[in-house]
Length: 309
Image (cartoon, rainbow, N blue to C red; front, side):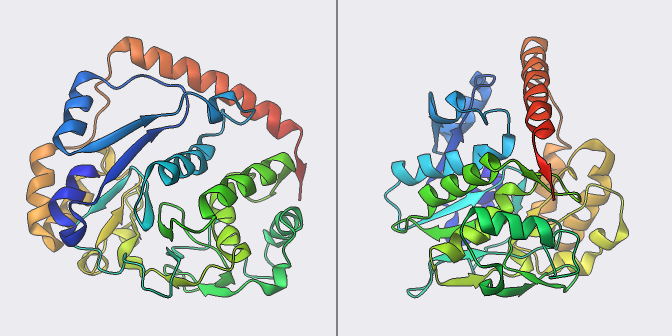
């Protein structure tokens, strides 16, 4: 993601980047540290906060803690969150906040969202809104880019921008924590989409003036060999690809073909890199497996105490 940002994002190519490690894990190896130095990446390790909370097992809580840390570290007017599985293939010219805007995000699909009264996720959304003291009927309606469904105010949290001077970062963490504290779980998706549901609700709660980002700025690619998500015409207008698992060997060839046919320069560069692989030594792999096991047990314990709605 970082190298593609520096190579292909145009006016954003020199944007300051902070990489945050919010909870305990394997330390960076020398090769990664050299890469960070080469591309001027500030590396921030949080020694407290999430590591000392009851939700350190929840990988999606990494996001609000990392955002708050970057918010306190940065002096930029705007903060943009980027998931690590993003690929810049052209300049994302819609990412700059206008004078009358404080929040930008894309409604990619309806996964985790609700279309209203008859939706299976509506009871869960009602419960979340009660926890946050929000009236669900006041939420704006948005349209998903993929299915063109009309759903309540909801965005994909893999790529968004907010104005730093707002209280967004602090409120986002507080809202994610409140939702988990409530021990509510959805029949349809458990508590998997907590960070995404809290994203839009936080922006709404704060009254942030917003603008939807086009699908080209968070174009989701399925790691499955599904032709729907590999049509070349869908790639033509893309500026940022959210590739998920598509760069692992199983989906690599189909993904690379589409990038080469629609963004030849990027495709040539990707081809020189090859598919992703886990080259960590066995000691780090063992540590990661132990951490995953411990955190999955904590997640299961939490889940058993949830009320399913």
